[in-house]
Length: 268
Image (cartoon, rainbow, N blue to C red; front, side):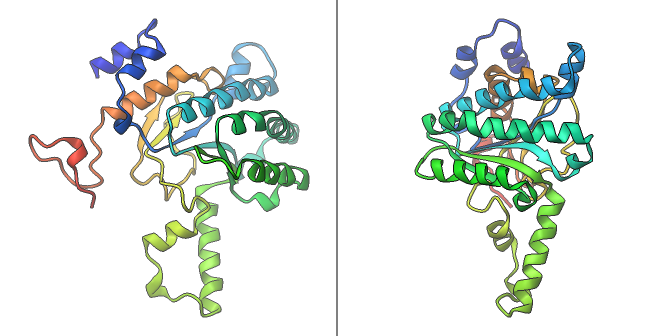
C-alpha cells in the first residue's frame, strides 16, 4: 500500500505510474460508474448542467487512455433506468448532451481504432438518439481495437429480467430447454456478449456502492473507489486505479499457497 500512496502523491507523473505497470498486469476490461457531476457543479456555484457538460472531457480522456493502454474494453455507465426519475429538464439536458457527444466525438473513436457498442434498453430512447447510436456503431465497426461500451437506459436488474424473458420465449418455442442454461449460456445472451467481464470497476465521487451496474459481469471484478468527482477524473486517476488493481491478488474463490504468485492462482 505504501507504494500506491507514493504513486498517488502530488507531483508523481503519469510516466512514473506507467513505468511501474507491466502489460500483463493490466486489466482487460475496465468499467466505470461516472459519478459526481452535480456535486462538481454545486461546488463551483454552477447549474447541474455544467457538471454534465464538463464530464464529456473526462469521457474523452478515459477513452483515449484506455485505447493507449491497449485494453480490450471500456464500459461507462452513462444513464441508468432509474435516471428517468430525475427532473424532466435534467433528463432532456442529458439526452441533448448525448446527441452532442455522438456528433462531436465520433472522430475520437475512429482515430483511436475504437469500436463503439451501446448497451441497455436502447429501443426506449428517442428515435434521433437511436439513429445516432447506430451511425456510431456502423462507422466504427471496421476498427479492431478497444471496445467502448456505453450503458444507456441500463441497469443490471433489467438486463437479467430481459434475459429471463428471452429464455421463457425460447423455451415456449421449443428452442431452449432448462438443462442447456448454464453460466456460459447466460454470458452469451447478455448485452455484453463477446466482451470479457470487467476486471476492474471504478466508481468516482467517493460513493461506495455499485448502483445496479453489470450485476452478473462484475462478480469477480476488483473494486476501486476514488473521491475524485467525475469531471475532474484524468488519465492519472485512471492509471492509479490500474496500479491499485495490479497489486492485488485475484483468487476467484480459491486460495494462494505460500510462495505462490497471484498469477498462478487457479479459478474455481
